[in-house]
Image 1: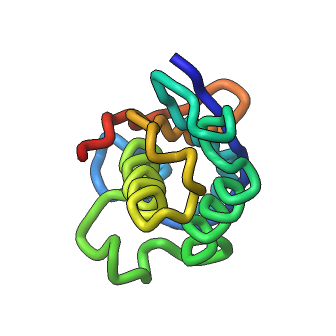
Image 2: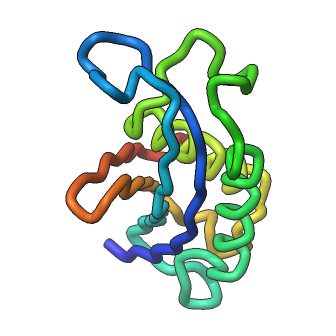
Length: 134
C-alpha cells in the first residue's frame, strides 16, 4: 500500500458539553496539527498517489472555515460535540469531497482510503480512517 501524507494546522475555540469533559465544558482554545494520509494499492499514471500540492491546498481549504473561529457558533456543529474525533471525521469528509471533485489530480483516482489525524497536543491525538467507495 502506498501513502502520501500532508500536514497543516488550525487554531480554534470551542466548548464540549458533558460531565465527562470536565474543564473542557468551558470555552477554551486548541491548536490542532492536522495530518491527512491518502492510501492507494497502485500509483497513478504519473507514479504518485496524489498531487501533493493539490492535497495541501485541499487541506487548507477544508480547515479555512474553522480556523480562528469559535466552533460553538458554526451552524455545521450546532448541537454536536466538537471532540477531536468528530473534527477528524469532519476533515475526512471534506477530503473525500475534494477527491471526488478531482481536486487532488488525475493520479488520485486510485486512492482507496484516507486517514485524518488531529494532534491536540504532544501527547494526545485522534484519527478517523475510512475507505473510499466508488
